[in-house]
Amino acid sequence: MKRILVIEDHEAMRENIVEILQLAAYEVVQAANGKQGIEMARQTHPDLILCDIMMPELDGFGVLHIMANDPELAAVPFVFLTAKAEPTDFRAGMNLGADDYLTKPFDDLTLLSTVAMRLARSERDHPAPVPMAARLVNLAQAILHQNNTHQSLCDNYPTIRYPRKHQLYTAGTRPTVLYYISQGKVKLLKTDAAG
Image (tube, rainbow, N blue to C red; front, side):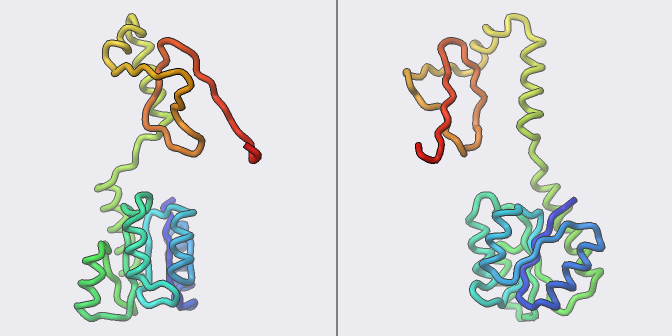
Protein backbone atom coordinates (compact mmCIF):
# COMPACT_ATOMS: atom_id res chain seq x y z
CA MET A 1 0.00 0.00 0.00
CA LYS A 2 1.43 3.37 -1.01
CA ARG A 3 1.93 5.94 1.75
CA ILE A 4 1.08 9.59 1.10
CA LEU A 5 1.98 12.52 3.34
CA VAL A 6 -0.47 15.43 3.29
CA ILE A 7 0.91 18.72 4.65
CA GLU A 8 -1.93 21.25 4.89
CA ASP A 9 -2.63 23.85 7.58
CA HIS A 10 -6.36 24.24 6.82
CA GLU A 11 -7.92 21.44 8.86
CA ALA A 12 -11.12 20.97 6.80
CA MET A 13 -9.16 20.83 3.53
CA ARG A 14 -6.62 18.40 5.02
CA GLU A 15 -9.34 16.08 6.37
CA ASN A 16 -11.13 16.11 2.99
CA ILE A 17 -7.93 15.19 1.11
CA VAL A 18 -7.10 12.46 3.64
CA GLU A 19 -10.59 10.97 3.37
CA ILE A 20 -10.47 10.88 -0.44
CA LEU A 21 -7.04 9.22 -0.44
CA GLN A 22 -8.04 6.67 2.20
CA LEU A 23 -11.14 5.73 0.18
CA ALA A 24 -8.79 5.09 -2.75
CA ALA A 25 -6.85 2.62 -0.54
CA TYR A 26 -3.79 4.76 0.15
CA GLU A 27 -2.16 4.89 3.57
CA VAL A 28 -2.23 8.56 4.57
CA VAL A 29 -0.09 10.45 7.07
CA GLN A 30 -0.88 14.09 7.80
CA ALA A 31 0.76 17.20 9.19
CA ALA A 32 -0.67 20.63 10.03
CA ASN A 33 2.39 22.70 9.09
CA GLY A 34 5.73 22.53 7.31
CA LYS A 35 7.84 21.70 10.36
CA GLN A 36 5.57 18.80 11.33
CA GLY A 37 5.56 17.71 7.68
CA ILE A 38 9.34 17.40 7.55
CA GLU A 39 9.37 15.42 10.81
CA MET A 40 6.62 13.10 9.54
CA ALA A 41 8.41 12.61 6.21
CA ARG A 42 11.61 11.59 8.00
CA GLN A 43 9.72 9.19 10.28
CA THR A 44 7.38 7.58 7.75
CA HIS A 45 9.29 7.76 4.41
CA PRO A 46 6.22 8.43 2.24
CA ASP A 47 5.89 7.45 -1.43
CA LEU A 48 4.41 10.88 -2.31
CA ILE A 49 4.05 14.25 -0.61
CA LEU A 50 1.13 16.66 -1.11
CA CYS A 51 2.02 20.04 0.39
CA ASP A 52 0.29 23.40 0.69
CA ILE A 53 2.41 26.47 -0.07
CA MET A 54 1.11 29.09 2.32
CA MET A 55 1.50 27.73 5.87
CA PRO A 56 2.64 29.06 9.24
CA GLU A 57 6.12 28.33 10.64
CA LEU A 58 7.53 26.95 7.36
CA ASP A 59 5.92 27.44 3.96
CA GLY A 60 5.76 24.84 1.19
CA PHE A 61 8.76 26.27 -0.65
CA GLY A 62 10.85 25.84 2.51
CA VAL A 63 9.58 22.28 2.97
CA LEU A 64 10.51 21.38 -0.61
CA HIS A 65 13.95 22.98 -0.27
CA ILE A 66 14.73 21.01 2.90
CA MET A 67 13.43 17.73 1.49
CA ALA A 68 15.27 18.18 -1.80
CA ASN A 69 18.53 18.41 0.17
CA ASP A 70 17.78 15.33 2.30
CA PRO A 71 19.23 12.24 0.54
CA GLU A 72 16.49 9.98 1.91
CA LEU A 73 13.64 12.25 0.75
CA ALA A 74 15.01 13.87 -2.40
CA ALA A 75 13.51 11.27 -4.75
CA VAL A 76 10.02 11.37 -3.21
CA PRO A 77 7.52 12.93 -5.65
CA PHE A 78 6.36 16.32 -4.38
CA VAL A 79 3.06 17.96 -5.40
CA PHE A 80 2.14 21.50 -4.36
CA LEU A 81 -1.43 22.30 -3.32
CA THR A 82 -2.27 25.99 -3.51
CA ALA A 83 -4.89 28.63 -4.15
CA LYS A 84 -2.22 30.78 -5.81
CA ALA A 85 -2.61 30.37 -9.56
CA GLU A 86 -0.08 32.98 -10.67
CA PRO A 87 2.43 31.79 -13.28
CA THR A 88 5.31 33.17 -11.20
CA ASP A 89 4.26 31.04 -8.20
CA PHE A 90 3.90 27.99 -10.44
CA ARG A 91 7.35 28.57 -11.96
CA ALA A 92 8.94 29.12 -8.52
CA GLY A 93 7.65 25.76 -7.32
CA MET A 94 8.76 23.93 -10.44
CA ASN A 95 12.21 25.56 -10.28
CA LEU A 96 12.64 24.23 -6.74
CA GLY A 97 11.92 20.71 -7.99
CA ALA A 98 8.19 20.19 -7.47
CA ASP A 99 6.80 17.39 -9.61
CA ASP A 100 3.31 18.83 -9.99
CA TYR A 101 1.00 21.62 -8.93
CA LEU A 102 -2.70 21.35 -7.98
CA THR A 103 -4.65 24.60 -7.81
CA LYS A 104 -7.39 24.78 -5.18
CA PRO A 105 -10.22 24.06 -5.42
CA PHE A 106 -9.69 20.75 -7.19
CA ASP A 107 -12.09 17.84 -7.53
CA ASP A 108 -11.62 14.26 -6.32
CA LEU A 109 -10.85 12.90 -9.76
CA THR A 110 -8.12 15.49 -10.40
CA LEU A 111 -6.49 14.72 -7.06
CA LEU A 112 -6.61 10.94 -7.54
CA SER A 113 -5.40 11.02 -11.15
CA THR A 114 -2.48 13.31 -10.21
CA VAL A 115 -1.51 11.04 -7.32
CA ALA A 116 -1.73 7.89 -9.46
CA MET A 117 0.28 9.46 -12.29
CA ARG A 118 3.05 10.73 -9.99
CA LEU A 119 3.33 7.39 -8.19
CA ALA A 120 3.50 5.51 -11.50
CA ARG A 121 6.14 7.87 -12.87
CA SER A 122 8.16 7.57 -9.66
CA GLU A 123 8.10 3.77 -9.85
CA ARG A 124 9.21 3.90 -13.47
CA ASP A 125 12.01 6.40 -12.82
CA HIS A 126 13.13 4.91 -9.49
CA PRO A 127 12.40 1.17 -9.42
CA ALA A 128 12.28 -0.40 -5.98
CA PRO A 129 15.71 -1.66 -4.97
CA VAL A 130 16.19 -5.37 -4.47
CA PRO A 131 16.19 -5.93 -0.72
CA MET A 132 19.57 -6.64 0.85
CA ALA A 133 18.44 -10.08 2.07
CA ALA A 134 17.48 -11.13 -1.47
CA ARG A 135 20.83 -9.91 -2.83
CA LEU A 136 22.69 -11.89 -0.16
CA VAL A 137 20.68 -15.04 -0.94
CA ASN A 138 21.46 -14.64 -4.65
CA LEU A 139 25.16 -14.20 -3.91
CA ALA A 140 25.21 -17.21 -1.57
CA GLN A 141 23.51 -19.37 -4.22
CA ALA A 142 26.01 -18.24 -6.85
CA ILE A 143 28.89 -19.05 -4.52
CA LEU A 144 27.52 -22.51 -3.69
CA HIS A 145 27.26 -23.43 -7.37
CA GLN A 146 30.87 -22.55 -8.14
CA ASN A 147 33.73 -25.00 -7.94
CA ASN A 148 36.68 -23.91 -5.85
CA THR A 149 34.62 -21.12 -4.25
CA HIS A 150 37.33 -19.68 -2.03
CA GLN A 151 39.86 -19.29 -4.84
CA SER A 152 37.18 -17.91 -7.18
CA LEU A 153 36.21 -15.21 -4.67
CA CYS A 154 39.83 -14.27 -4.08
CA ASP A 155 40.54 -14.11 -7.83
CA ASN A 156 37.39 -12.24 -8.90
CA TYR A 157 36.91 -9.71 -6.13
CA PRO A 158 39.25 -7.13 -4.65
CA THR A 159 41.22 -8.32 -1.65
CA ILE A 160 41.93 -5.85 1.11
CA ARG A 161 44.25 -6.48 4.02
CA TYR A 162 43.21 -4.69 7.20
CA PRO A 163 45.52 -4.05 10.14
CA ARG A 164 44.71 -5.58 13.51
CA LYS A 165 41.91 -3.87 15.43
CA HIS A 166 40.66 -2.13 12.28
CA GLN A 167 37.01 -1.13 12.58
CA LEU A 168 35.03 -2.36 9.55
CA TYR A 169 31.72 -0.76 10.44
CA THR A 170 29.90 0.90 13.32
CA ALA A 171 26.42 0.45 14.72
CA GLY A 172 23.80 2.52 12.95
CA THR A 173 25.57 2.69 9.60
CA ARG A 174 24.20 1.04 6.49
CA PRO A 175 26.16 -1.75 4.87
CA THR A 176 27.92 -0.86 1.64
CA VAL A 177 29.86 -4.07 1.03
CA LEU A 178 29.73 -7.74 1.85
CA TYR A 179 32.85 -8.96 3.63
CA TYR A 180 34.24 -12.42 2.91
CA ILE A 181 36.91 -13.20 5.47
CA SER A 182 39.54 -15.44 3.93
CA GLN A 183 41.95 -15.27 6.87
CA GLY A 184 41.91 -13.83 10.38
CA LYS A 185 39.33 -13.16 13.08
CA VAL A 186 36.43 -10.74 13.35
CA LYS A 187 35.00 -9.54 16.63
CA LEU A 188 31.55 -8.06 17.01
CA LEU A 189 31.39 -5.53 19.81
CA LYS A 190 28.34 -3.86 21.25
CA THR A 191 28.32 -1.08 23.82
CA ASP A 192 25.58 -0.09 26.20
CA ALA A 193 24.49 3.44 27.12
CA ALA A 194 27.36 3.74 29.60
CA GLY A 195 29.93 2.91 26.90
